[in-house]
Image 1 (spheres, helix red, strand yellow):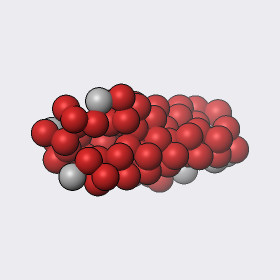
Image 2: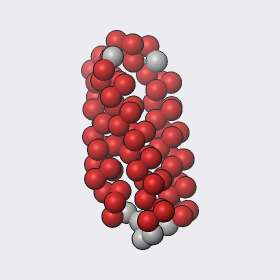
Image 3: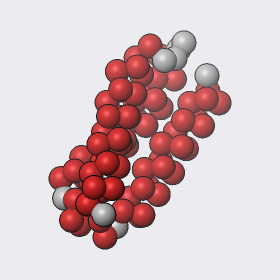
Length: 83
């Protein structure tokens, strides 16, 4: 179970960092970029929380994944509509 927690934490952190690197060039207009950057922050936050305390995260992994997936999914849909 700990391996699964660390795998999710690593994925969320790497996804957030790479998305943050692509956010400045992602939108045509300047106001579109904040949605992409906010989605990146949610991913980095989920990765850091998971990797910081994997024992606690194992107990609440489903809850943490649902927050991460819901937050990034909503922000990506909002960014897609605005783009």
